[in-house]
Length: 94
Picture (cartoon, rainbow, N blue to C red):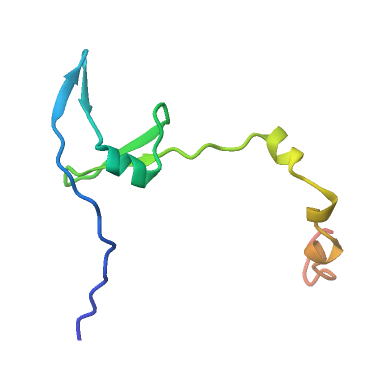
């Protein structure tokens, strides 16, 4: 029996490759921008495959250390049970 993977339905629209100054540009239709949650000015990663296909993925913003530390509260600190691994079994240096 052959098993087929069911792929999610993708929204497909056509666009035209244009010149924008000395660069090449493609306008992304508004419906795709909205569904992809892209924002004007957001960085994207453009990947190309050996078959000539192009994938555009949003670059996720990485939080900085100050923001991460600001989110630490007494209620979300780890307790002893979160990192108590027991006594050494082999030649670990504890």
